[in-house]
Length: 332
Image 1 (tube, rainbow, N blue to C red):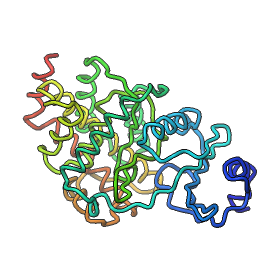
Image 2 (cartoon, rainbow, N blue to C red):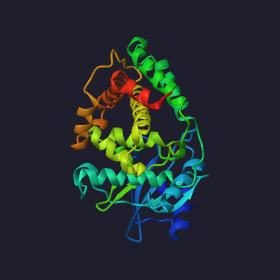
Image 3 (spheres, rainbow, N blue to C red):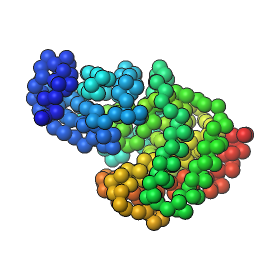
């Protein structure tokens, strides 16, 4: 049965457009979320149809559909035409997109400023529903990956110690909970030739503001000066030593988070494989290749290398001389 012939989708089409028969329906790559994603056309106008194919604690439309609506109301996300939490079916405006890294109309500084402003506006929206403590979630991911036996415990020990140290420090800081996207990777920041849009809200929940900031800094800033520009724009002033130190800690946590996302994904794709060590190309090199349009993350080998690079970046961050300076600035 075609997806548009299922009762839930037919209901969505009828309520949205007064017809259950779209002009066209083309499946798209749904990324890593596990949802079915389609480009439909109704009355000559394209829309994005998203149908949830699995549900768990993280992928609960009852939590993230309201977040998506709030982001759309704030003009951060595409207009929501239809969203039914019970059926797990959503229809939003389709965005014809260009490459953010290669086609952005302004300078890199302009792009970083716009991105920081979008994150600040997101954090000012009414509070999203809570889900989990962010650090508890990353710790659980680490435990789950270690339990797979995909990599020997000896290869992970230094990385785990580094993460535990950063998490211990971060837990001593007062939380700054805001409406957070929690997955601001380049697939989820779209450019339509005029402006940026934030999409894919499955991971949205109430979380510490620095984790979104860490994500955009780690993905989009090529140099520390660009990370400083992001922070300065977000806070509308120079962040100061304490804020900069907190962001530094959050960036190491973010490295661990994405390292585990891609290593868990790699293990699921090839459960028979075994990772002998954590060596590979550096994160800067991989981000350069991604920025040039190379499909690094489309292969198992590329996803594995990216996960390793992220874990190694966190370890390097904790071993860097900046780390004790950040500890001192936090005055814990």
